[in-house]
Image 1 (cartoon, rainbow, N blue to C red):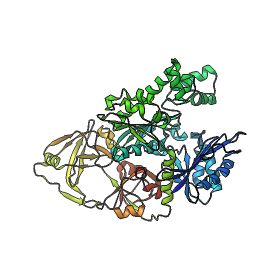
Image 2: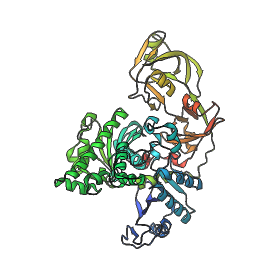
Image 3: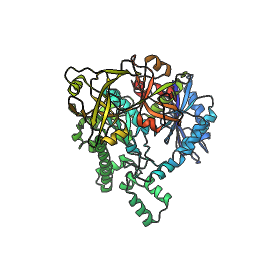
Length: 602
């Protein structure tokens, strides 16, 4: 499936016709200085083509026919647009209509340098190619899974809500792409890995990915927060910015220019924002250039250490982007002090590593390294094409089934050994009532759950027995008991906190096992085929209730012949949404939900 991918900057345009599966470019064009007298266009086969374009529509009016002509007889299936900021509304790719255009325009205050240009390209392309489906793919979407503790700033909550002040994160398309590539290289499900991905270029960010979900990232409400970048300061004491503004007589626009365009590597080094030039100067004794490299690498190493703690362990560190893929010096300086996390750099491999489209993943850690260190070539155009193809490919899918909603109360799953410790030797769980999922039942047995702060009595045990002990609680229970329970898939208790269980015959102190269950949908294979989804996919579900309508994102699909169709949410979420047991939901879309990127990459 051929997809036209468009990336519109304020005065630039990048366009490519991409095979969504292989990532092969059938044709490419790049336009610079739109709106200026000397605007330029370059095609793969004609780097010196002439172009005069006052705006994006004029540029696209010339470039699109040329690109389509270069694609030959192949037909375009759709157009994918990169959009930097999706706000809270857009956490998945979405087909563009007038309502979506208005929503992107409303988000301009959150990304004044990017969304206007993205929107200009969308409006122009839809006017020029109205018969093709257009899809918006958002840089912020991958970070829609950030937990509340990671996305909130410690400012007045009402003001934050009023003005959309929260951490959104960026470079999500790249972080998701290289994480999927790393999982394929490691021959492991992404849902089993804890990764730290470092997208390093003129813009730079780092992301903590826990079992396929972004749980922390360095950029915040805007791309200014976090790492040192080409011209952006990254993390800075707000008081320092206020002090500079007062001392230099800078207004808000002046501070914006200083921190976004005159800081970072450029401000530290005095030699511009190109790290290659800075490395050359440093090698010749330039102290400002050396300082810039030291600060850049120190900041990144600090984030990696913090994110390893957030994840509770580490399977791989991934370097990507122009600097991450090409600077052996930066990788060396960042990775050389990470042995504490089991990451041991192979200096020879690092010196030679240059990830490319032909060799997209290179391991630069030693054979004995517990945590892998990888250099992975990112390809955001390929990722956008794949996301667009998923949506376009499922556009004719009929999705008529409604999904019943089940509200999960706190409960306990036990191993047989634990059952006997708590209820006596040879004890078998006593079925009390069948549950909606075949073969599962509520038991007559109940336990007391004792946390560091308080205890909860009468917590129901569910059967049959399981391979691991697991206590599923709500967020309210978490704070009541005094434990810090992660949001996890059922059965995934690695690194979770333990707790004490008290039964009529004895007690057990679990070393791990307390989780808040991730919202999920059980379905049989025939249901998965109907919806166009597969086991492990992550979807959005629109809930229609008598209380209030809303969309739940980050809903995991679980497929088994043993399951019947049902979505599970915990008590807190149900109460917040005013859900009732007979409420139902529907998938927001089909095609975009069907084929995770990791399958495309395989």
